[in-house]
Image (cartoon, rainbow, N blue to C red; front, side):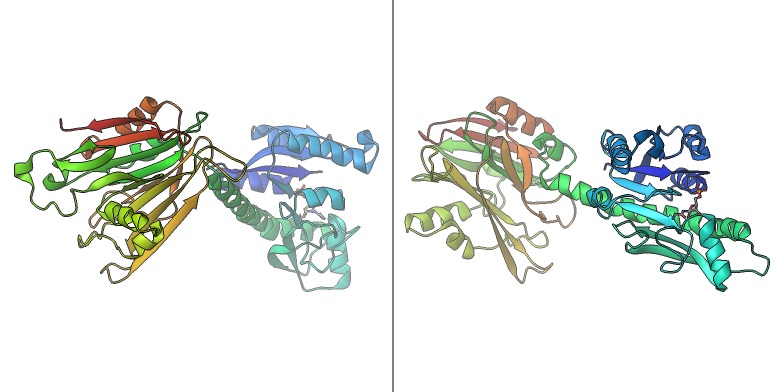
Length: 450
Ligand code: GAR
């Protein structure tokens, strides 16, 4: 998980910056990392605090920049060159333009030394705020952390903390108390809150399009059970299909894959040891016309029969449900590739679907039927397996088929899968790469027992 990269913008003493640095050290600020301290004032003491903490610094002054635009351009360069995700204004005494804040919408926060909407807006900053509060005669003041938008001190409030006015308060004394009693507490807390939200958003976006190597997914999982992969090879445009089986019981381990007329079957390795063949002996992969079917049970034949009658993959699976192996209620997973011939303007050379039939409750009273339909993408495959991991009862696969990469080299792919499947539980693996234009294929078959 990549932490939110934070830039803290300062102009002066930097005690709020110090509170953020301390919060980072103490683990209060956990989801963000301060990677830059930028000052609008070259002699700000806050720069020294940053250096002492080993944080990179930058100085951009309005005077040297010559104009507000050039000043903001200078700041942007420093932020963009470091891929900053979030900005904390901690005693930053310049107002940023609407154009600037729009670029970091809900990603800039500011600490202000009053309870907004009192004593805020243009011209209200630093000591002046406390003078105004005392002149007005308020009995309670405090601090606010808010998002920064185009209205000075006008963005949504994130946190506030009140501080009672005392008899002997002068603007300076009050400023110190508001800092110590409110600002230094709520600024790190608010920074953490926003950093966490941004980190989760960013990681979710990255994950959405992430493509893993199948070896990585298999290596950490002792028992994904049975698995189906379908996808397109990286550059050669082949349709890849793979099926593996694993087993925990002796009955289930006593198996091999065998090929007959282009169809793949599970068969007993030692026929004398077969206890119950019903769920473990079946056709795993069969072709019907331009369709290739692959499943973890005898629903292969159901799909085959339905296709023959002119019906669909989904219609076939409507008639089936998960396996009756209480308490595991093993899901039925299925895949189908429909070859369309050459890639044409009307669409890709093939399309594929995956399905899982799973129990919707621990007693197996209801069956959920999920079908996923994919357009192939070069180098991308989808992987579905029966179980999330090992366990008793075995936890059924959850979520969408996982996105994995499919190399051009069938041996490399088969080896990567076989090597990473748990050594004790793996039994057999079959991989087929088909040329969608001709239907010709090459395949690899690996049996543990042979
Ligand atoms: C703090 O009191 C902060 O709230 C205020 O300037 C001071 C900076 O102190 N900011 C504003 O008034 C912004 N409108 P610091 O440099 O020690 O953190």
